[in-house]
Length: 260
Length: 269
Image 1 (cartoon, rainbow over the protein chains, first blue to last red):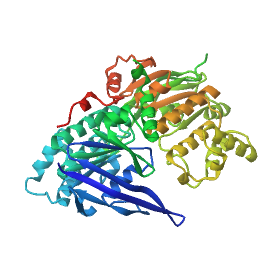
Image 2 (tube, rainbow over the protein chains, first blue to last red):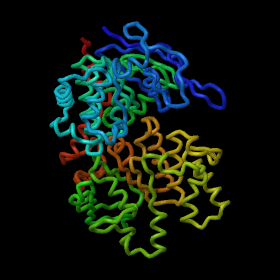
Image 3 (cartoon, rainbow over the protein chains, first blue to last red):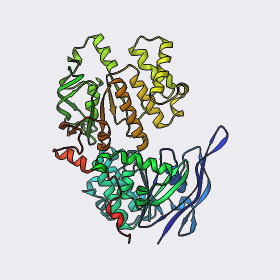
Image 4 (cartoon, helix red, strand yellow):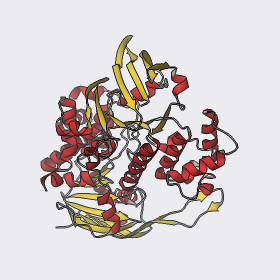
């Protein structure tokens, strides 16, 4: 089974001339066909882990240690980005170029990963149909401002699938999206991950999303993974205090149902 | 008891403009009747684009309705004299979703919280500084935070600064427009518990605009559901909620599971 391993990832920033560790000796492994949720409080280093593994960090933040291994073989970050790992992000509106159509985005994606050929238009339309974008011919001509947040997130998933990357990083893919749309997008992510046998790294702070989608869970706090387990084990017997507070806060929202 | 806020027959349309010229006005609110009583916690629930934030802005007086009117203690907003308008502005405050966007990045925390005190009260500078210290403690921050700049605080801390600013003029109603949506879940619950404390201590009414039904359960006594610019449900919060309208039931059906679903009990292939 193909695996993607992030090994001993260390990310730091400078404050008052001193190094501050943001991600510290983090190791995790994704398997194709499974969804791994990376959870933790705001600022615990979840998103930096995803961007650091792909060599795209914000200014002032640098990777000090770490390797990315595909089936045990070290890879250059610039070569896995888009080819081995596709990414979908929170806030799809800011992830698209506002002056380009969906067709231009899709063709650019195919060109970047070297999959563009005479059949590209058909591939794009089939993939859009797969993610539930009806009438692909019309949608391909639209600009981001002509589309809803839910449609844009579907398009971002279609672009991720076009890369044919075996691994998908989904960074808060439904945070702040309308609850009804969120439920449909989570159904979609689950379906395409199963059908295409993707290995998914799901970054979220919402344990409801974890309960809905994840097979396995890693809990982060202050740049380190503090607990690992199956989704059942994490919900039924959280061991670390950070995990316990995440689960307790989540279940507190369901007091009615838990009591019922 | 006189309602704090009473909306009757509210209508609001927006006109959109594009390169193709102006389109037909889009009706975002239609025939809204809503009453907010002193001290009550009212959830305003609905999907994106249902008009809930627009209704919030009308209640704040930031926009005017095209049809109908809003009464503050029985007087239409348009008929308030300058003293009445000042009383309304003190009485109704707001906390927005994006705290970093809602503050001036060059002002320190003390100046941010003192702003409504400068405009809406006759406290002098020393009294204002003392009041800011009280407010910081009330929202769980420290007096030392007064000199910090927004970028030196986390999202959760800065949202508390915005809450302190809303509390400063001792309002009777606080509109929370997705005010906890940007926070992680632990912080969302802590913030809602803070609102509950404020309500117990001060009897403040809250209009809690959200799309997350789970939070309505935790915080609200009554919930209004909007769909397509209209109010389609107005019911007390019970366990479970008794919704009849399809749009409200769709929101109910979209609530995420509390625990892993049965799928996980089956061995993975």
